[in-house]
Image (tube, rainbow, N blue to C red; front, side, top):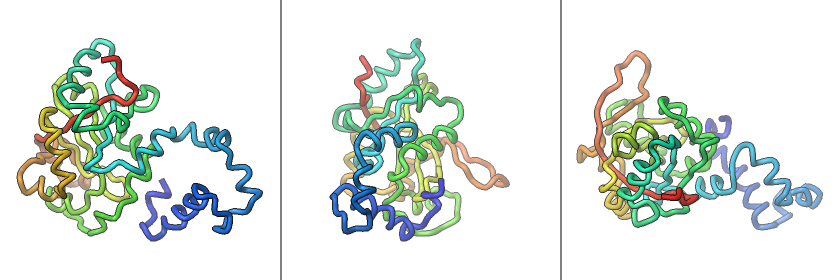
Length: 242
C-alpha cells in the first residue's frame, strides 16, 4: 500500500486532512463545497469495500497494551474449541477488551498462509502502524534486531491455533511488514497485556526468551528459524455465541 510506504513525516499531511474533517475546521484546506459532500452516507459508501468503521477505530487505538484479536477460524466443527480458546484467553476480560475483537468470515477467513492473513490485516488496519515507537533501524533477522523494529502486534485465532489450543501473535514494523509470528499459551495473555501496559517491550520479550519464532520472513537466501512460545487472550467483538 502506498500509504504504508511513506515515512512518518510524509504521512503527516494525511493526518492533518483527517483532523480537519473530524473537527469541522474549514480553514484547514477543505472548502465548504467539498465538506458538504463528506456526509456519513458518502463516507460509508466509499469506505465499506475497504474498511469498516470498527476497523478504522481499532486501527487508531490498538496497541500492544490494548491488543486487537482477529478471529480467522470459522469451521463449524471447531466452534466449541474456538469458544474454549476465547474463554481460556480471557477474551472480553482483562486480556483483550470485547470491542478490540475483529470477526468477519468474509474478510478474515484466511488459513494456511500466515503471510496472506498478515497482508489482509495491514490492508484493513493501516493506521495501526502509524506509531513512532519503532523508528530505529536495523536489518538483522535475529530476535533482538527484529525487536528494535517492532511497532504493532495482533493476536490471531486461526484453524491451526484453535486445534492446537494456542494463540498466534503477529509482530509488525512501522511499514506493516510482518517481522515474525510467535505462539502464546492462552492463560498467559492477561499477564502479557499487563506487562505491555507497564512498558514491557518486544526487546524485553526477546531477552527473556519468551519469543521463539513460529515463522519468520527473512531474505529468501536465509533459512527460516523454528520454534515458539508466548501467550495472550481476547474475546469476540460480535459476541461469537460462545
